Image (cartoon, rainbow, N blue to C red; front, side, top):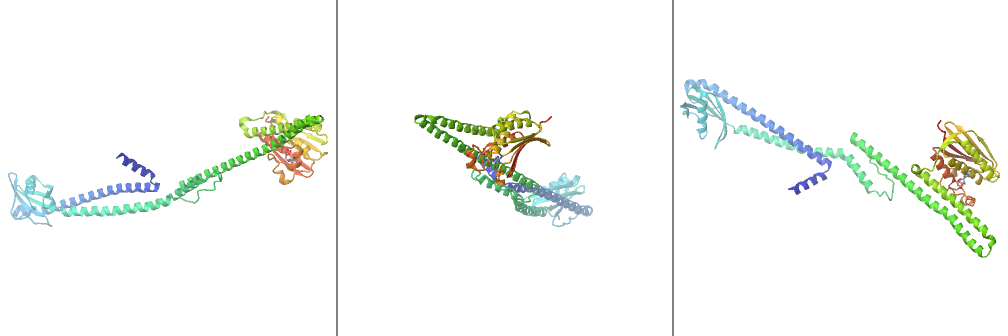
Length: 474
Ligand code: ADP
């Protein structure tokens, strides 16, 4: 038994929503129809009973005065049975001339009871069926009794029951069939959405991180419309976050590949110089120092590269482990120091300055690194003798530092990419000059970490890098 219920419950849980609602509606309609049916049949039965009683009493009332005088035979109205009973000592005996159905014992008892007043009863006669019997006293010792067969009345009620059963069954069938159709139509948008969800489930996100599927169609009511919109917004979110993740992964992969590649170059050089050093140690001791200093140079280059990579990695991690120690700093002072160091270190590039004080809350060491990188680029990527200008000013709510050179400039197509990691405009030429292609990436990451921006404007003869930082809050 329990197994049967479990199976039944399992089947119900697997039933579609539309079928469930239809079955629920059907059950509800069945209950309503049953209630309506029972009530109407009850009312009808009551009405017919009352009418029969009225007819019985009316026919008897019209006969009683005549019978009181004549004591003759009572009239037979419709197909009723009527008889006059004489009652003596509580025993009723039918007078001749009356008409009585079957065994008259039950009737005689009713007639005896009716001496004191009208009596109405339902009886069932064995071979004749149900009867409504009414007896009323004619005078002190005689009673008029009429028995009306209830077969017709019951037949009418039975007919009504069948008509109702037929009509209700038809209505129920129409309700279930039409309701199922209407519900299926109404629930189609939900089924479509479920289809979309299945499509997504079948979609291999690892192979193809795009989610091109969306719940399409329109209509279905406000709730369905809202659900569809929410569904599509959710899909769009998943789509963008997937795209962002894929792009971040791709960037990381490229970064690791580029970094390994860049690290391999000085390592190869170091190995080469180490071999030369060993050879020189045995054969040409005079050249040993030259090879050793080359090894040192390459090591220094590698150290710069590794430092830059580490800094970028830390800036990428952002909140977790920030490498910045901000303090109130005058950007003009920093730029002045950087320009002085530049003038001393690169005497072949004349440098001029125009510095207005501009206070910022920033890490002075890192800001100096930004300025040094920009100045170094102005020296490395321009021919000797190229003039360099450093300016600091307050513009609106920002402190602005500009490093301008009169060099050959950067082609418009390259300007968009110079901030990319490991990007160099002319790979072979600048590599010999020692550039790693990370300088501007570091500049951009540091400035962004300070809440600022960096941009470039370049044309032959004038290249300007502009760093904007938020002013210190007073
Ligand atoms: P690196 O200087 O190590 O090559 P950067 O990221 O600093 O790398 O610069 C990227 C590229 O942008 C450089 O290779 C260079 O071609 C170009 N560049 C940067 N600054 C200048 C400049 N002032 N004038 C011309 N080209 C520049």
